[in-house]
Image (cartoon, rainbow, N blue to C red; front, side):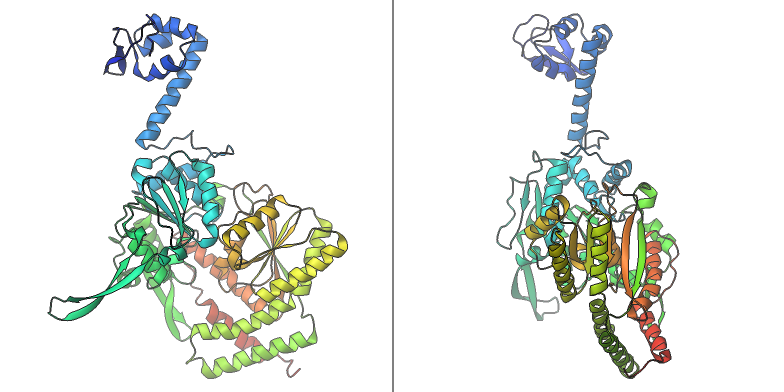
Length: 585
């Protein structure tokens, strides 16, 4: 290093109070040392620097050009020091394509840090939970790395892409674990991505016998998995509702992996879907000191009510108290609260009739059979069995809507230049819609429709989405459940929901693919195809109440008791079936 005053080669002799004394006994501010090294040819700077002894004098005597350069470099050095210290910078977190977090996302990053990196980010879909989790790693590397991202199988590549986009590679090199043989490699990577399903493939069980404290022999199972002992500082659980069943193998694997890890960041816009007891596993994982057992959670926080002849969970006992209890580690924001400029869903219910008299007869025959079986065997049948019988009716209704849906698709292609996503439940419904739409497109000279379903691998799914986003095809026919989580479809603003889901949260997951940052339309249109006078129509009347119940629970407000969707739907079918006058087709 060359002294800017005497030009002799020097070393740093001492550093006191931010001033570096060089071996030639000249002094300069410590923070400006990089400027001395990198800008030796800046004559103006060297001249100004040679006349002063402190940073303050430099800023007083340097000309305007030098002042601006010094201020710029000093600010950069300060921000780098802040980054090294693990503090959140409000200006430097930027994606490779130039995007920066919104204020509420920065607040979410700060919330994660203030929670001690043990929290649930439960923001509504489309608000960037991924960005907030990655931001927490970006600005707190000493406390959070290495980190493991546990995701659904179909989302591994998307998480990898987002990590590279927001974090870069330097200091955040990522290993994607794609099978149960390639173990995480220590010392080289900082990020590791593994799916819930692949995680358990590494587990090996061994049985042994040990003597209990009462002197009795007992068999014990030991579990071994490289992810249990790997020195992760942080586990990020994406779509945390995946561990909703406390007794499932998947949940047990995650619990064993997280057992001694200091930081757990859970992400889910719908941490429970069917009933409030699904909330317990993630609450216990994050804060076992508050939620120590499933039994105590049930007794203290779960509200019960009569649903038909059964006494079942219907919501939170005291939502306001629950929110106060958890507000230090659970954060939930809605679109209308933080991004009012994002469009709302415009739901339109398009009613159609049976395509043929045979379909009508088949449907009512199945409905009558359902009513007879329910009245005769309700006490002995489980909800799952009743759902199975209902599914027959739903399937017939789904097939009935194939031709009306294709008509809607062709109408859309003719009248707009936008893209359209068509959500279905049954595979044969998808195939029929795809076949009829393909034939129409071939005849009319339109690009052929794409298909997105659970049978595609992760790379194939990414390829389909890329084709839909960047290619000429304007129609994608997708499985509601396969496409409902993790996809970004903000380049599309129209969808058709052909077949209803028993759980409205799954439909909201699908709708949420469009209401994401980057959506340019002021409205997202969701057309629900409804067959009048069927289970479709009755379900539609009931489902809005359950939507409101879920939303109010997540916001910590009073929950309107809506009971079981299944029981309510069955009761409507019983009443409508008895009153139906058209019989014996």
